[in-house]
Image (tube, rainbow, N blue to C red):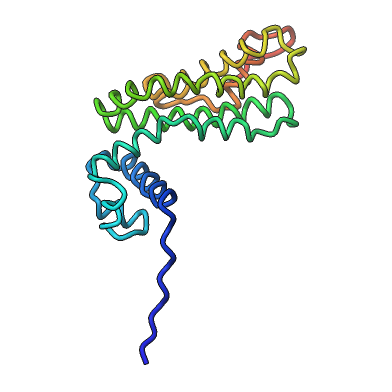
Length: 202
């Protein structure tokens, strides 16, 4: 008697759609938009025909994947997960690391897609702007407990952290010598001017 392995239970529709989008985004980041539906299906662990029960065309799936990269909700969720009981410097390093990873991914995607990436960024501009305030607020909340240690208001510190992180993540500026999140936070909190009795730092 021949036995067969039981098939894995099919994913619910929302999870199946999310799996296809996540797999497609990973492939687009690695290879550009000219990925095949076979590659996508293999990466997502589904039959190729499953794609077209969720998306009308491959282009629709690729567009959904690119759009998901500009969704700020995961960034906001990560920022809110930073341990608020850690020391200020550790909190800011964690926030800078999260923002740097997110920013580099966006820059890489736009570089990979070229004009398509720029068009998608413009299309989702309003959505990103609507969520930018929430991300800013999450960073401010990490700073507020130590506001008495700072000469700037938490909102100003958060803005400076974001500007430093974005600038230090752009490949045009830091292609060979990127700043680490710890370096970014050190520059933000301590600056670069030598203090009395302190020797030059590398």
